Every structure is written in structure tokens, then in C-alpha cells.
Length: 117
Image (tube, rainbow, N blue to C red; front, side, top):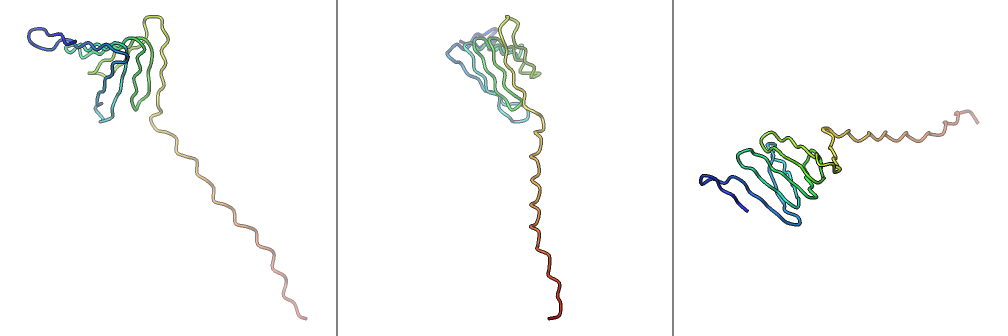
């Protein structure tokens, strides 16, 4: 549903099993979200996801029953209704893979002394 105020879109409400959204972040990465209900308050630049929501982005994953996402600041606020929230945060700089040591050369047999016959 799209709600208007003074001829402008004021609020958008999506309902479904699951309603989905995508947003391109400032760095060009994509954020994907889904929830039973998604409400976008245009003037406030706020998206409210309720009912089994899940948000995936390169920074991590967040899931629970209610989340308020500020599209202007990128801040997310989850929980508040007593339900559990699950968050997985990706490391900023993954540790480099451990270097594999070079194989040690095989030992050569000792040379036999050269002698007279």
C-alpha cells in the first residue's frame, strides 16, 4: 500500500510471506532484507521490518522479529519487544591465509672420499 500526504508519497507498506527489499549502499554494495511486514516512512527515511525479518549485507547478517533501519545514517536498531535477535558481523579485514613453508630439500648422501686404489 502507498499512502500519500499533500500529493507526495508519505509511507509505503509491504505485507507478505516474505516481503523483500534491496538498497544500494553508499559504497555500491547491496543490502537485502525480508520480513512479514515492511514499512517505509519516506520523510523520516526509516524502514521498519517486523515479523521474522532478516537483513544481509557485506557487513553482516541480522535477524529477529523487529528492526528499525535508518536509511540516511545506516543505523539499525533491533529488538525491544523481548524477542531474540541474531547478529553476525563480518570482520573488516579478513586475516591473510597462513603462508605455506617451502618444502625442505631432501638430504643428499655424503660423498665418498676419493682415494687411491
